[in-house]
Image (cartoon, rainbow, N blue to C red):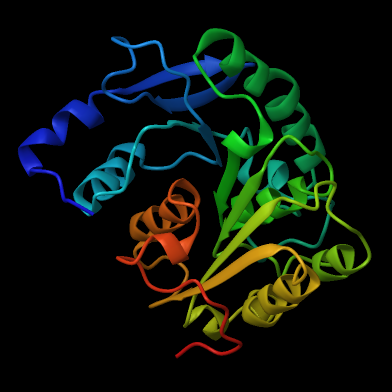
Length: 262
């Protein structure tokens, strides 16, 4: 993949705008030639507020195609909107998560996506619609495949699949779409968490992978812990989707599943 000249990065980062959809703050990226053309574009939705400009810079520098729309959605409450049901607090200083992912996803599917499809030149079909998320946002991306069929691909980056009862939930159900593509990404040191629940993340992610083993699913290990090189992890995830999977993206580490990090 040919890398972009750093001097050309501005034309990409200038295409980011802030807007409110269904009373939720969102960051939207449109390709540089969007206003001059009539083409329709696939859409990546991201659970949670992300550093879109930094992420886009990494994408462009790495030569990943950016001919898609990218919308990140800031939740009203990270711990509440990105948990599927209530559970004990993650630590003493926090309130217990209320489990409002169904409410969040209903708004994403019922209001935000229809707004995008009505006001921008999107390709609204599932094969051109992806949902990604990091941490609890990744948990909710995976949860989405059991409650909606509008996404043709989902990505869980360092997803909180250790969440109470979630592995059992996955193992007792089938995704609504059998053709959905699923991407798991995890840091090699994430299981070293001092929190015993979070320390189960590798085991739980592997269980999640195995529960979907008869589908198009990929699992990629990354260096570092939970907060290591988040932008680059998103770049790998977007490349996986945009370029049809890691087999078609030789510049990126293999997404082939390994039961233990190497």
